[in-house]
Length: 532
Ligand code: TNX
Image (cartoon, rainbow, N blue to C red):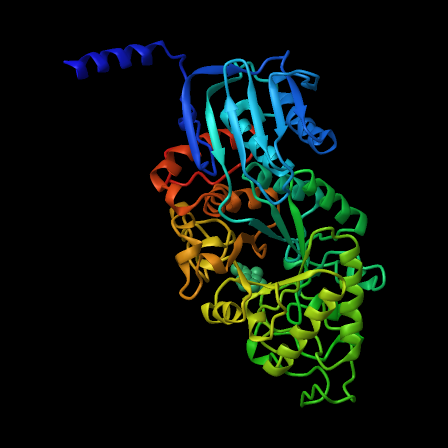
């Protein structure tokens, strides 16, 4: 009898609740650590104002960010004021603490955190709690209601990244900023820019201007390409920093360097391009024998390359000029990179002799360290002696990752079979590759970095990153098709511990994000794995 009374009573309470989902059902991605609902709603109105408690200089840009995000859809001009119903409060001063609390009450929303980044993530969660139209860039007549309740949240991994290959196809400033905006909504905090490859050199180096004049003039397929001036790059750095995202620039070497070798013949050891036929790899341009130690090699610029083969180019690891060049590049790049990392590539150097490769990676790490930076490199770099604190990015080879762990270095997890955003969803996908796997949304979601590879456990893991290689990606539509919805799955893998992740819950929650993407004009892939 008591049970029946309780049921009647609770259904009565339920029917009195305002319509609309409870906080748990608002479709927050990545899923927060803890969510509890109370039964009410907060309404954002034109009279809403933001009250900042704590260091104004670090909080006011976040207030401006929030106001900008909602201004077009709501038409509200939300200001910072002495008192306001949106309270952003710094409760401590610990920049590495990204956790936050979000309390939504009928009359007030309050975000508290020990760092500005935490406040920013609270803002991202708050944006997801309002109707999906809130990120529209058109005026919407919607009641801006948020269900009341409270959220406590903190990330599983401190490095949560995405990579964009701007070398195979050049991706311009507007599309890069758009990509950064979406990373921010998913609480990703490191943006790895793959700036150089065989097909293009995309960052201005003032002491070696032909890198961009010549090396920046091509791309895969030979289409219109480009590069970032140092000023452009700094604008990207600033734009990302406003969203608590650190830029990780990559200069890929000693392989993947044809664009540099085409720009400066004096750097070219004289390796032929594969003329569609990999059997020609390793043949010198001049003479019949390749002799890396010979001082007699006639060095001429390599031909510009617009194909998609990998592994045919290398720097000359015996040449002093190679290291002067790298020193200049790393010096100039370090000066415009406030973040702690320089990515040195190191992948697929198939025409560099093994011993030479090891010497090369060790020398390059020294150069990076000299400029006060930490090296990250693809997992092959672990075949060399890694400097303490340097990071190996696992993409394919567990053995290499194991070598890094054995040296006491940490691993950035980007397993190609799960995290590669350039892989096709299935055999019918209009673009993408499939050498590693077909990756449907459930596959991108259903893995745990801490148990994915033998020999790599939680304490070895530095973070998670999802790379987008652009051999088949030419424009924003192509990016959107491959990146969404999978980046959301990878963001949740990086932010939320395995214990809180659940595919069925994710399938339901991502529908809300789909609505948000629609409102932002993002043409995401409507996978049949989700009942959009
Ligand atoms: C392998 S992953 C590469 C890239 C290609 C990618 C295509 C890695 C470190 N190297 O050069 O773009 O596959 O999926």
